[in-house]
Image 1 (cartoon, rainbow, N blue to C red):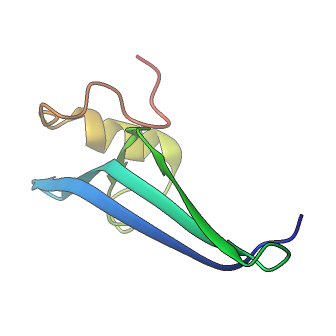
Image 2: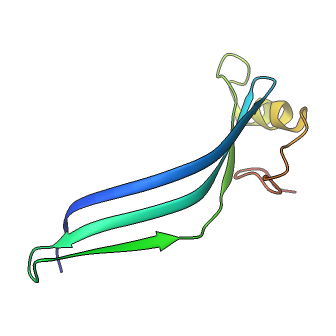
Length: 86
């Protein structure tokens, strides 16, 4: 099966705390066309991943990034952060 004309729609919940940007995917929809059947379908995901971003000049490596993220209070919507073991 071959798909064409793929489109994704993503909605994020986000906030800045000091210099850390916290982002959580709260909605993801994938829409695609199947030229063999001439139909368009879509699928949604309820996967809620929370990520944290720190400017590279503040955190050039992973251990510094983890320290910067752990130095601030995480927002309520982030119980876990992708890449940080609790």
